Every structure is written in structure tokens, then in C-alpha cells.
Image (cartoon, rainbow, N blue to C red; front, top):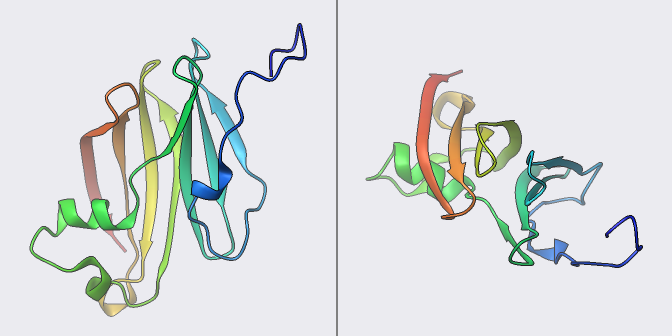
Length: 137
């Protein structure tokens, strides 16, 4: 909504956010130039990140479990790696107006360990540009 005129500029389709058990306390993080807004869509059993592109008047979800595990474990079936289907993807920080860091916790994997780290996503090109893997707890 444009605050000066109270005109609705864009309405997002929040049903795209794949959360299980409802959507609780979504948080919104705007880029410095106000082109992009990231919404943390956290539910009881999972969480995802949805992006709004105010320039293109579009919304889309950022990569989640399958794509992330596919990067780190390219020869494995993601569904078979997960012992307990719980994963949260949340906003971490802005690197620039179009690059954003997303933190993730995917669990539980083998031996009931949580796989946690982050990736950098280019919102303009709509692709992951860098993954960081530091630990598996």
C-alpha cells in the first residue's frame, strides 16, 4: 500500500508460502531501495521465505528443502535424507538491494542431526548465487 494515497499497489498470494500448521507472526524485511520485501512465513512445523518484487508486481518463494539438500547432497533423494520433516528458512541479512542471505535449519537428517547454514539469493535473477555449509549439529 502506498501510504500517502492509501492506494493498494500489490496483493501477494500468501497461499504460495509452504508452511505446515498455519502461519504465525510473519515478519517483513525491506531492501534499502524498497524494491523487494522478504516475508518470513513461519508455521508450527516449517518456515519459508516469500519475496515481493514491487517493481514487477510479483511474488515468489525462495528455495527450500529439496533444492538446498540437492546442492549439498546431489546424489541423494532429499525425502530419504530427512528423518523428521521439519525445516525453517528465514531472512538473515541483506548483502545489497538485490542480494539476500537466507538462514536454514533442515532436520532431522541421519542420527537426528539438524543441517543448518545459509545461502545467498539474487532476487533480480531469481537464483542462489552462493551456499555456505559450516556445520551439521
